[in-house]
Length: 139
Image (cartoon, rainbow, N blue to C red; front, side, top):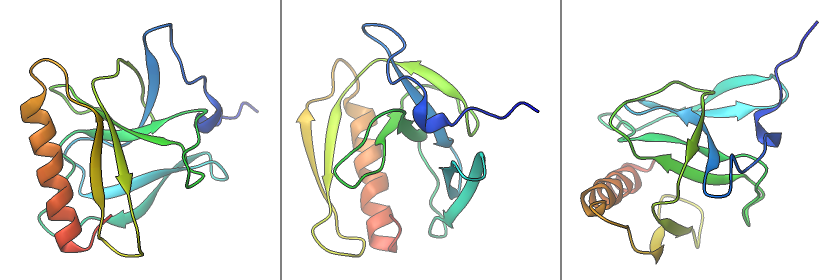
């Protein structure tokens, strides 16, 4: 029997200038999905607050680990939506650091590198999504 490879352990980099992103919650999704390595499948983490949906594909960079022990999060900026479990080679557009000082929806966002080129409108959409999600109590 063949088993699906653990998406957490895929190589982080596709090439010198591309890294992999594993999509968990695709654009338009109204639920937060997460990779469950024990199941070998995506599972529902929680629904988003009523009226919210992901403005872009959301996932993680495999073979990485942030301060919280989870893989680094990634948003994929393109004009289409994909599906959970898809691995997409991506280039860095910006790096954003989210800090959560206390339990709950309060988050502070700090740009580590400003968006490049014409990505300013995308950055504004992501900030607006974050504000609405925080106000609704969703993370």
